[in-house]
Length: 313
Image (tube, rainbow, N blue to C red; front, side, top):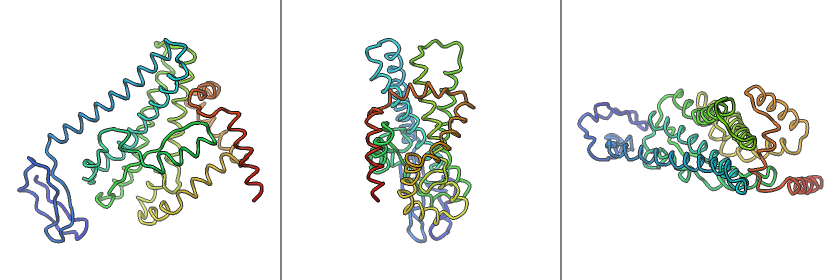
C-alpha cells in the first residue's frame, strides 16, 4: 500500500507505505488504536467477484426458466408466473442493496467486504422487521408479499458528504436498469411472446417503477430521506429515521388505503407516469393476479373489518 490513511477518530495520519497486500489485515491507528482500514489481497476480491457472478447467474437462470415454462406449459402458468415476477423482484432488490454496498466500499467503508454485501446474495440483505414483518402486514392490504432488504453501512468511514449522497441514492440505479430492460422487451418488435407474458412484463415494470419512486421519497428511513440529510445533517436525519420511520411508514400506508382523496390523487399521478413510460394499466391489473397470495374478496373483507375497528375510535 502506498497511500497514507487519516484516522476518522483522531484525524492523525498513518503511514501505510510499507504494508503488503499478501494477507488480509485490519489496520489500527498508531495514535488512538481505532480501526482505520483493511488490507485485502487480490485473491479475496476475486473470490467475492466469483460469488457475485454465481448469484447473478442463479437469478438469470430462475427468471429465464420460469419465463420459458410460463410460455410453454399452460397448466403451470399460475406458479411459473409467480416465480418469474418474484425472482425478478428479488434480483432487482439484491442489486439495489449491492449498489449501496459497492459505492460505500469504494468510498471508504472497508467493513462491507466481511459482511458479504458484495456477493449479490439476497439472504445477506434480509433483516427481520424490514424484510418480513412490515411486508407481512402489507399483505393484508395489498395481497402481495414483497420482502424488504437493507445493508448496514459505516458512513463515518466515508469522508465526503457527496460520497454519502451517492451511496444513498445509488440503490435506485438497480431499478433504473431493470426498468429500462423490461421496457426494451415490451417495446421490441423482434420478440414474440404471448399476451399473458406481456402482462407479466408490465407488472414487473410497475414494481420497478414503484420501488424507484418510493425509495426516493423524503420519508424517514427511506433512501431519499437519507440522501437529503447526508448533504445537511446526518445526525439529525438518523435521529428522525430511528424514531419516526415506523410512524411515517404507517401513516403513508394508512393514507394510501383509507384516505380516498389522497389515494385518488396518488393513483392519478402514478397512472400518468405509467402512461408516460409506456405501461398499460389494464395489463398491470391483469398481471398482478399472478402475484396475489390473498384474493380480492378477502382483501375487501379485511378492509371493511379494519374500517369498522378504526371507526370505533
